[in-house]
Length: 186
Image 1 (cartoon, rainbow, N blue to C red):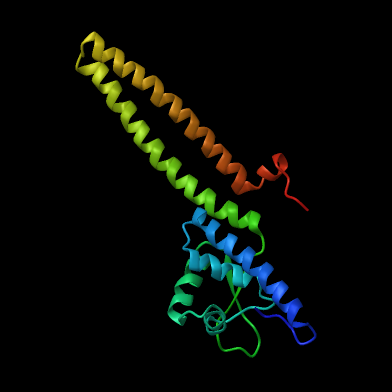
Image 2 (image 1 turned 90 degrees about the vertical axis):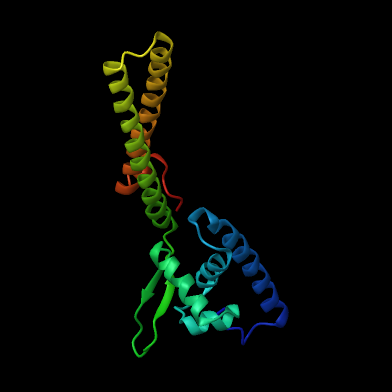
């Protein structure tokens, strides 16, 4: 894992490897939050502990996986802005390193995912509101049906308020003001 182990005892090497493997395993399992497979999560963990950018070949060798699998995993991590492609003088191969700003990674991913969900849900709620309004105005439903529709309309408007609030929360994530409310650890 990119360690200069020449001056270390075998016991020291084993301790460091055991600690890193434990962290990599936990990170790998928790990457499900990002919709990432366990092996891609392990790849992220490998890059997290690497002391220099790595090529696909180096990653594949370290993880005992094919270059194709490494490429797929790296592409996923690149798409999530969790890994960066870097240039190194004299190297003809693509090199990758982890994005260490986890706050930004979290913001990028969850703001995008939540924004998409909010937009989809608001669109569905607004369609339902229009449909209920139309039914109440034009079809003259029975009292019991009208009561149900009005009750549903009230529930839908409450849901709409929640999604507008969530939209504002996403805005605070994207513009960084969330950190005024919940400061980053330093």
